[in-house]
Length: 278
Image (tube, rainbow, N blue to C red; front, top):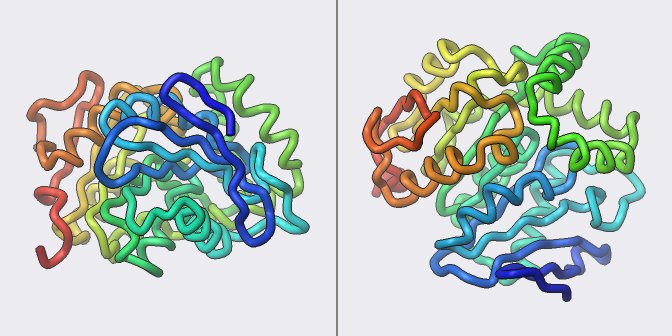
């Protein structure tokens, strides 16, 4: 186990394979577990995790086959990655957590919430891509390329080594699966309090109008926030705005236009973050 200021890294045994995990050493309450996107490690999630670690224990794993975790014989699909995430929680003795997913981490987190809602106290979905807006695959690849020009250049040294390590063919297979996952539609049936955070410059996301339409059909425990200047990797590019919004929501203090962090220009609320039926 290695240490950094306020953080430790460790190797977990999950299904007989080594999984790399970062964990903060301060904070209290339910842990906040960050779930990364496709073909990349959890390293780019650390700017937001560092800020949330001022109050809560934060956990940032590299899912099996990603980043510094041991490679698998085959690429795990989204349901299998959801099972692996629950196994990571088991290995850390975490019975219940707040899940913060980005990109492909959103469908993974949604699958965990639907399969085992008792293990997810609250759910934060950052840039929940997938569905009709990303189909067919060629359209999604064009969207991905366009988004790449809108991300911070500082993301390149973080992302490129992970993408190379994961492999182009593996990345294409998993990206195809992500584009077929109806993330926005699955939000309608979310069984736990959920905050969706979107980037106004995210080429992979549906229009704000479409998101509002989905939000109107959604249960009262779904809240939608928009960070207008952000692209897809909000956790890396806009950590202050994202962490501030998450913190307000976890404190049940998030309301339309009231006390929002600078740069969060729009919130579509259905109320507080209380659990369904509470």
